[in-house]
Structures are given as structure tokens and as C-alpha cells.
Image 1: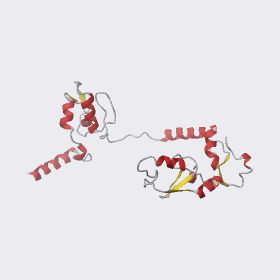
Image 2: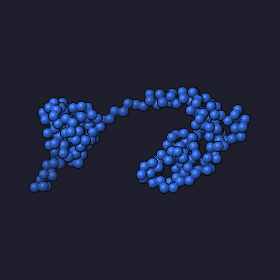
Image 3: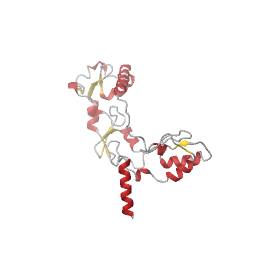
Length: 227
């Protein structure tokens, strides 16, 4: 465990945990640890040098916070000096730890690990069950093999390539998700149904927030205008 010995030497350092404050200003937004060799981007955000290198991997790198283009950064020397001269309280064991040593301390502190695990459990228990009132009309599950997360075009391609010889009668997941759909109706020829009914996206033509009567009236009005 890396601690600044007995903290007789650390007593003159600034304690960033005093007065109810925390160490959030010293935490990297990528790794969520105390900054290690902090650097500041041209858009004003600060990262560990190693975390910034990860952001630079894509062909067109962007800031992990604001998505601005990354083109220039400088070493955050003032922040590095403040980290070297500050101490904070470990939220696990309560010991005063130099910020520059906090990473290695929390990695080895069993009480800190218990503190994190308890926080995760408490958060999970306090989260209400999220029940979406709206059906998912954007991704579908293959009715033959239960392959998931297929968009409409992906479902058509998947069924055509993987199940062209499957004669089973199945429920169309696209139709079943629609306000007028029958989740129990099984298509006698599902592949033919896909080719005829789902060569376009309903999102282009349907306002799901409108009730069926209103949609019928709008369709009638459009047909009169077309004539």
C-alpha cells in the first residue's frame, strides 16, 4: 500500500477533503481515477495522458467529453503540481492519502473495495424497474431462430439467407409491434409476407401517436386531394 509515511510529512499539504469538498476536480472523465500525467485539450477538457492516447486511436479523434475534434493538447502542469501537493481521505479506510498515490492505495485497500461494492448494491436496489409503455419498433427478433437486434432490413436479409427453406408458420415481429398488429397471427408464408409488406419502413408513413380513426380520416383526405 503506497502511503505518504505516517503523514507527518503530509500534514502541511492541502487536504482537498476538508470542508465537505471532494476530489471530483482531480478525476479523469474517462477512467474515473485521479489524473495520471494530466493533459488539457484545446477544447478545455483534461484527461490522463494514457486516456487521451486512447481517444486518439480513431481516424478522426474527438474529445470524450464534448466530441470536439482533437488536434492540440498541452501538459496540465498546474494541475499536476496541485495533485502532488494535495491529500484526501480514502472513502474506505479513512486514511489520509496523497492524491498522487490514491490510485495505488485504492487498488490495494480492501475496505475501499467493500465501499465500492456496497455503493453498487445500494444503487441497483434503489433503481426502479423501467417499464417502457411503448413497444420496440426498431429492432426485431427472428421468429425462426430467435436471433436478436435485427433492424427491419436486417430481419429481411437474415430470414432470406438463413431460413429460405423453413416452412413453419410464424408471427411477423414487425407487424406484431404495430398498433394494429395481431401478436398471435401466424403467416402461412412468412418470407413472401416480408417481401410484399416490408420493403419499406412504416416510420416513413405512420405517426404512431395518432389513433386509428384519425389515420383513416387523414388517408381519406389525401386520397381526395390526389384525385
